[in-house]
Every structure is written in structure tokens, then in C-alpha cells.
Image 1 (cartoon, rainbow, N blue to C red):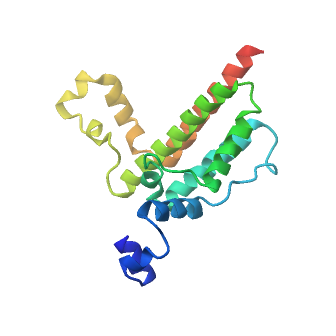
Image 2 (cartoon, rainbow, N blue to C red):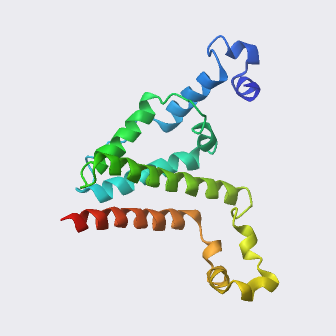
Length: 185
């Protein structure tokens, strides 16, 4: 609250004239930063390109607003209309697959989990720490004990940009959805 007050040129107590609590301020920040849900109707037909675009736009919010990741994890927080709109767009696209509504929810959780995880790794990378996996890059004398891990490190897997990982994971998730729905036909 102090940082926000300084940024807008008021005292911390003055903020409470506008917001009943810090939680209320954060909820508004999330609504503004996330913005209204995207309209994906103009995109190429089919659920896959639309869900890909939704995921990339979602990921962009986390890149533009590093605080967004932590702010959206507040327990018991009320979702705002913009957030609900973003979710509805994703569920609308998922409803065009042959997944049941319960499976659509599971697919959404996997997808948003991947986006959030990628954002977390990107933030660590931006702070100069490649990721929480950094110790794996220093196998040293244990290299021969973990040959598969050593091969991934030597191939540059731990040096890739997070954007590449986001796209690869997204491809895996969407291909999995496609495989499940094709198997049902």
C-alpha cells in the first residue's frame, strides 16, 4: 500500500478513502491488468488455433505484469468480471472439443497451470536465476550417475528461453486433447 501511495502521490491512509482494503485494491489491479476477455471469433476456425491464441495472450499478461502471478494466488479472492470473461472464453473454446464439461475443466487446469508455471520460470530467468532447476546444470562429478539428465543439460535444454518451453508445452497439451477426442470417434 505504501508503494502504491507513493506512486500516486498520496499518503497510505489516503488510499483507504478509495479502497476498503489491500485486497480490494489488488482485485482492481488484476481486473485492469488482465483487461477484458479477448474475442477470438476472427481467428482461424477450430478450437486449437483459438486456444493457442488464448494461451499466448494469457501468458503475455504475466510477462507485462510480473506481480500478477502472485496476486492471482490469494486464497479466497473473488474473481472479477474480466477474469471470469477470460475463463469463459477458454471454456467456450474447450466446449468445441469432444471433451465432457468435467474434462474441459481438467484441460483448463492443465493449460492455465502450464501458463503460470512458464511465467514463474520466466520471472526467475529475468531475475538472473535460470530456474529452480539450476542445480541440475552443475552436475559435476555426478554427471555419470545421471546420464539422461546430463544429456538434457549438455543438449542445452536448460538454457532455452521460456517462450520456447511455453510453446512446446502448449503443443503437448493441445495434441493430447486432440488425441483424446480422436480416440472417441
